[in-house]
Amino acid sequence: MSFPWAEHYTPKNPLMQWIDTRLPLPRLVYNAVGAGYPVPRNLNYFWNFGVLAGVALTIQLITGIVLAMHYAASAGIAFDSVEHIMRDVNSGWLLRYAHANGASFFFIVVYLHIFRGLFYGSYKAPREMVWLLGVVIFILMMATAFMGYVLPWGQMSFWGAKVITGLFGAIPLVGDPIQTWLLGGFAPGDAALNRFFSLHYLLPFVIAGVIILHIWALHIPGSSNPTGVDVQGPQDTVPFHPYYTAKDGFGLGIFLILFAIMLFFLPNALGHPDNYIAANPLSTPAHIVPEWYFWPFYAILRAFTFDFLFIPAKLMGVMAMFASMLVLFVLPWLDNSPVRSGSYRPLFKQFFWVLVIDVLILGYCGGAPAEEPFVMISQLASAYYFAHFLIILPIISKIEKPLPLPGSITESVLGKDHAAAGGKTAAVSAE
Image (tube, rainbow, N blue to C red):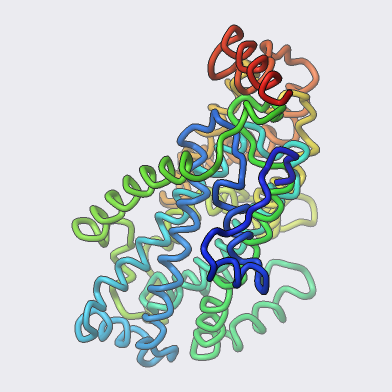
């Protein structure tokens, strides 16, 4: 973040000075996450989820690397190799459960991070690139999680791979060749398992690289804040360390407690029972569902049940599912309100909570059987999802009358009198 009042950092330790002159890593850390990074003084605990997402990714990387040492990407023994990890590898059960539940916790904190950004307008100028890179990370996470779900080679793994890759078959002309190329054949088998294992191992490192770009882009305009008001001077900020490292540390403690409870007491609560049965191409499960974090998009996919003109229902469902993610790319240009924070936008706030409820309904319907009334509810919820971004948000940004904004971040924290006194003190000290 390029603030004129940010200090130039010079390490005090002779060894750090020597390193800094040859490789400015100490300076980079100081300016990125240390006392050299000024942060708005009014950030609440919803700003913890970015750090928690980074911790969740680290857990996935460490556990995934160790699990890969014992996993066999072969359709004949993949399921048995997972059982071997669970039963024979020292602490293998812990690694496997940490990796499986870590994926769910990763998506939980990322979903909360996204909805925080939606409410507080973190996608608005000048942070459009931060938002766009965040959406790229989310899509990469979806791809990585899908490929990881296939690896245990249980019933849901096999049939999930068959159903999801079968979606590409709905694309006219090129669909079938793409599906065959993805699977390495006409049905999930050794070739598909090797492809998915390779990509599942590689993509987390790609995600880590995009996260570096995400943080880099964030440091140019600086962090947003609950008021949406721009930083106006040093009185509006505090150093990231120790103020927000302590706050993030508290949030991390809560996260790890909840993660430990899930890991040791409810390790299979988020898994599907059928995936503990070895894959059988001759036995189709009664109800094929993906992992819970895909359910809203799966509901949108299944919402299309009849052909429209020359467009098959399956193709419309595939297009709608991908469009539900891609619409987030254009969000910064759909919401033209000059006010960022939903706290000062009463009409926007009401529709935001309707959107939250709508996504929860989609999630519930995505995990339910493809029958009535869930199909009809999915259709209505899908229609509202797209209407919210493409119709409601642009209209709200034009007709809404926002509440008065505070004069500064300091004023929002301390009030007008304290803010004025703080400004005078800063002016006197500057002289």
